[in-house]
Image 1 (cartoon, rainbow, N blue to C red):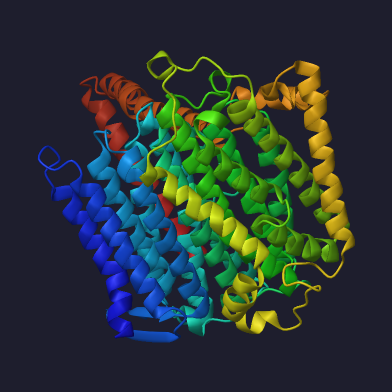
Image 2 (cartoon, helix red, strand yellow):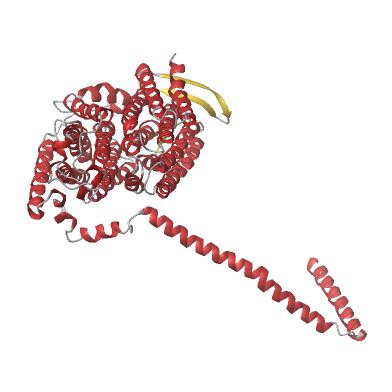
Length: 623
């Protein structure tokens, strides 16, 4: 039964997705959303049924060690449950938010195929089989962004190129790992992080970070926040991609390779995590669009997960994986609130929003809970996962802790600005078609937000439930030496909690100062935006000068110019130089062929003598 359930977890949503593409939209416009919601509900039922079973099966497939192998472990079962939960909530939400969109049918089909590929990637126990499902996600990523409205195709191409390049690194990593381990079965691989093993790990790590949206593979996410459908942002950058990317990063760090604090790879991961936290949150701080601000936070929060796993310490690893789950919960909720605001007001431009607390009270409460969670306010879930990451980071070096703590300050400051501007500021004149008629979002949109906000509370107040019963059992041998404070999610160093409280207090004071200085919530961080040194960096970012995709385009354009010049040079050799040489030789031959017989005899004799001299030289040299 378990084997059948695992196969259904992949096959059923895939079949439902293909069926959705065949449904006639004109006759039954509601059918795609109903099929998607029912298929995701079935996926959730399967995930609950198999959790937390340990099970594996394999059958020959392509030969050369490539088997049709699946394995359900505590970790993969945990992630599969998360995938099913978030997919179901987003499909319920999108039944209303995408109802009037012409791309609704295609979007729901891509969602179901994404669920199928995600389940396959999590359950696969063969590196090549894993790669097949992983690459399928690249196709659905492109398709879902292309279902947007503004300029989706250009953004879809950008996402495809950036994520595709990281997937290319992953392919090379898979080949190298299989070569070193002499097997492609993931559960049988255990390699040291030295020599080519470290190279293989880094290649696989690039693939994981590209999927999770860490820097520098991030720049398509803010563009997608504007161009792609909002449910897409809640589903992929908000939840599924973080679950998949961090799951695979944890898998290679804890199972496929032997990651230890003494390994040089560990500080590399930690610096990548720290840089992602700080640089992305600084960009989020100054955004004037609701969804774009959330997009940069989706990038920044990945940094905490990478930093926690990179510590290679039990407390940090638990914190990183707990933060993976927490981030999916509150980030999905935040994107859903953004979609509700956009649907009811017609915009996410913070200049045009304000005073929504009275008109959309449920959305406002869900936003406050999720914003407090992502900012690390106790007793919500984000506080506990961050504290565990802080504990591991401080044990590895104060600089990592300081950067992570600074990230919390800027996170809280940016959400104070966002909440003030959208919900508590002076009512703004939103788009004319909704002016005076703004009200709470429909129930199918509100209920998923409420569920996710409730999980922020449950996973915070009762944090022992996910930590001790879900995450720690999933980590197995990696939990040797784990330690916690008097409560499950508290670090042993209670000074860290006091410092977190102080930083959050400073963020509130900073907001009060900024509002008093500018007279509005949207200007609460202008003094940071225009601070000496930062203002020039922000200006460069605004022009796209710091976008790695732009660098890639520049490099591609330069390579194209060089190759074009080489092509023109080759054409010149064949079409111009060769022709001129032929004409020159022809002219010389015409001059030599004068018709004088005596001259011809002279040339013949000279040729014979030359041949004789060459023969004599060769024979003499042989002796």
